Every structure is written in C-alpha cells, then in structure tokens.
Length: 416
Image 1 (cartoon, helix red, strand yellow):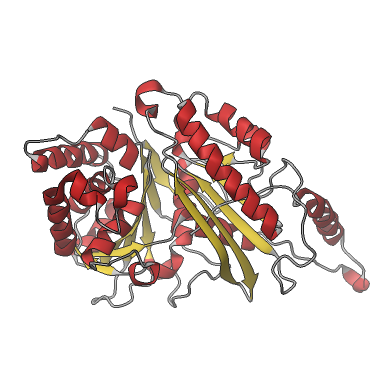
Image 2 (image 1 turned 180 degrees about the horizontal axis):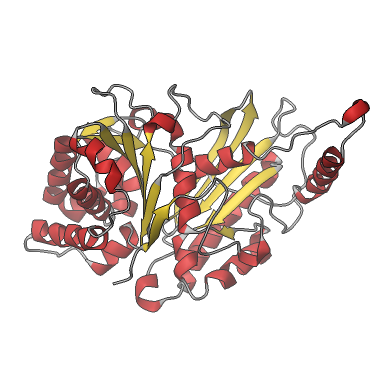
C-alpha cells in the first residue's frame, strides 16, 4: 500500500514540492505550435484565459474572460479519459488510455486556437506523477497538440483546489457560524485533503473573483487513492453482499488517513459542530444530483448545495441497491461513472468517520477555477521611478510583457 504524501503546514502561496514542472515548463504559457489569434478574441477587447486540468480520470478545459477581477466563463469542456486505467498494476500509462487523453487534448487545443486564448495554464496531476512514462507522455502531448503541460505536485494541487473553492468557504446558512472547513478534492488517482481556517477566508460569496487574499490550507495531506485506483483494487462483486464490499473500500481509506495528526488543532471545531466539509469531485456532485432527483445534471442547483451526513448515507444506500446496471440509468451518473461513484462515496464516508461533521457543501468547482485565479493574481504591475521616469523594475516588467506577448501565442487548458 502506497503511503500518502507527507503532510505538513502549507508553504507560502506559489510554492510547491514533489513533482516539478515537466520539460521546464512554467505552467502559465505553452510553447508548442503557434496558435493564430483573432484581433479581438473576446469580442470586447478582453484577454481570454484558459485553464486545463488533465487528471487520472478526466480532461477538463475552462476558457474565461476577466473584468473587474471577476471571471466570466466563455466555454467549458470535460471528457472522461481514464488516463490512469491500469496504472496501479503496471506503473505505466496504457497506450489506449493515452490515445483517449490525446483525443480530448486535441479538442482542447482546437477550442483554444479558435477562441484566440492568450493566457494559459495547463497541468497534469496524479497519473502523470505516478507513471514511469508520465513525462514521456507530456512530451508527446506537446508534439501532437502544441499543448505544454506541467506536472504539479500534490501540495500545489491542494492549494489550487482550495483557491478554486474560495467562494464556498463562507459557511453561508450554517448555525453556529463555522470556524473551519475541510476541502476534499477526490480525483481519479489521489485525494487531497486541506484544512482551512475560515477566519482567513473571504466572508462574501462571489463566483470566480480574483482577490489579493485567497484562502490557503493550514494543513494538507495527499492520499494516493482516488476513484479509479480504489475501484480497480476493489472490483464490485456481481453477486453477494455489496455492503461488505463497500465497507472494505472505506476501511482501506481509513487505514491510510487514521494516523494523520498534523491537523488535530482543528478537531475542537469539528467536535463543536463549527466545521464542515467541502467536497469537490465528480462522484460527490453525482451524489448531490441523485439526492435532488434531477432528471438531468444541473450545475446551478448542485454547486454550493448543502447536504447532511444522513442524506449522503441515504443516497449511498440507494446506489448500492441499484447495482451497476441501475446506476448506469441514473441521469446524474451514467455509464462512465457507474463503476466509480461508489468508490468516491467510500472516500467521503471514510473522511466523515475520521473527521465527523453533519454538513457537506458540494462543489462543482476546484482545480480549474484555482488555475484561473492563480493567473489573475500574477498580472504584472508597472511602477514609476522618481521624476516620472520608468524605474528599472518597470522596464523589466515591460520587457517581460513584450516577451510574453510572443510566447503566449502558443497553447491551451481546461473547463467546467
């Protein structure tokens, strides 16, 4: 059993550890083929931003404009690619899985080219971190699509997910007012858990607003288990006691997390009912859709939804009773998630057992939104020196902008 990434106090914003940028990429600009740009890509003289997240299970692109520090989504794309399929057993990315991911990435590249995106941040996560051929695949992506992806560390992934969920860290509607939140980002190959002190989080909800002060984890841990890896290790039995099978998945996750004590200073808030979980995951949004009994998935009703622990358990019981074929017919699950949704539910249940709280806030947002916000916060600022002349720092900034204007004509990223 692979040990979780070493957890610790979070570092200053922008720092990272573990897997660094692949191929020396900065992550904010791609350097593959040049993408021709229309003169006015946003139609209003606005710069277009793109965030691309290539995960173990999904490939997602989000394109947005920024006005008055507020992002407006222009286009979103998401496709299940299962890049990490079979990775736990072989240690390598499978050729068919890479082909699926490449097809989705080529669509992303076309959307970015068509829109004339100028600011891009494209990242890859756990599957490429784990795989022996992960960096070779990143190089292949650049050759075949022009997209240059950065393999980010688990710490950076956790920080960006918290940033992307900032607007849900207000405790709106809860009594007593919460003091802490646990942001739970369940991916295909890993799960990042981040403990956030709400006194330092924004108090007014916005959707995607860039701010100088963004919430950051006080403590975090990355568990090398996600919906794909857990489902592969614990295949669903065709007959027999499915509840025992589900419990075995919960036990596996509990064993990985139970000795983590760095965040124990937050336990008082959980014990007093002054904390909640923010869950960002396709599996968790699927639970929310089933809870609402939606005829089709509706992000506007799911994102920000409050669910009680008892409601989560009721939905899980329904999923177990349905069986895989029944889950495939559920409009908020479908065939692509039918074998994964209960693995995500098991991870959620394990976390709730070790960090008990009654309230879960469902997030249809996370890493992509964090990527967008991280780009907005890095906009260069000009300074003037004495006597009205340009200071040396201002000249360096201007020179950097000139260089960036050429480099930014090149690649792409992910969607909602």
